[in-house]
Image (tube, rainbow, N blue to C red):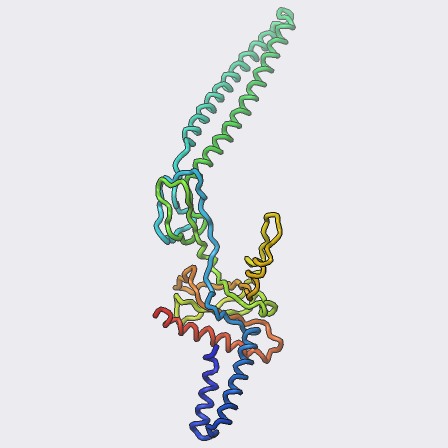
Length: 343
């Protein structure tokens, strides 16, 4: 922030060198007082209406998926490396089979046996119908009781066939369920993204992998609570990252984080310790703002990169629009300083 006063210092120095003002105790005190007053006004206005992250804690983040939390399941083989870029559907790793294929084979055999019983029932129904037709042709030479017995056997076989068909459908459903369980052994990428460190090895029964959705990167920036009411979705923002020193990226405010860790209440029954409440909240926390941005072509903004950002917040009057110069200049000076951060 102090770098913003460099133009004022240069102007005073030029006025003294050109003899416009004489450098004595009175003029020195006056110049310093005016400079301090201007710095106070600029800092105060900038803090409310063009807030910049002076903590350099602005961070690039991205949503991520936890791939198949493993408890009791054993990893069979891992197909990826550290920080690998993957496409949707790519195979990440596989789990050891838990006899699912044997279960599928047994169900298929049971299904074939049931289908054979259905064919046998069809054959019995055909024979009984032929027998009933012969009895019907004999007219008075065949008793009514014989014809009734034949009709009853046909009805029994049809009921048996219906039950067997229901059993076949049940077995088919079990086969589909077993196949789905078997396919779950293959852990695949649910979207295009980037893996982090590969901490899995064949044989482990505990662990997982994180897959970051690189198409949905965003920036999280801290602001003071005093700026909260001036931040609105869609406001213009700029930020820099130490990963790209001297370069400025642009974005838009997505939303303000409403709930913070300090706002959480313990779900366990019981009263809160007052000293813990005071200890956690006696200092100013502020809150964070989510900034959306489109990654420039040819850039791969690293997740976790830090820097600083500023936002063109709402102002009480349009004439105060020049305050955005301070936020923009502050971030640009920090971007230039990023070259020296590695020293």
